[in-house]
Length: 81
Image (cartoon, rainbow, N blue to C red):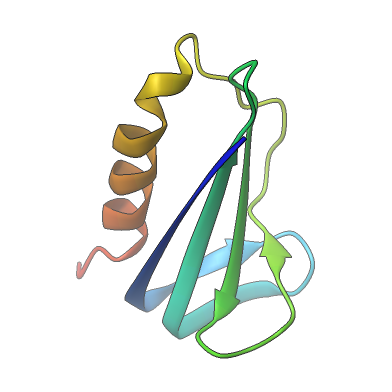
């Protein structure tokens, strides 16, 4: 299992399953299991409660791609326009 984390500012918000849209300074956490299955969670920086991003069944063909997918998602969620 491998976990990646990134902090970013979401000016337009990020949709979560539990509470709808959250915005501001957020932390994205992605976890990749050895079989390539992925999970994504997000929280306000410094908060204890984590929320899930909508969707399920995410899987990488090659778990070595986890870093790239994590960076792409963090960049998309931070988009300014």
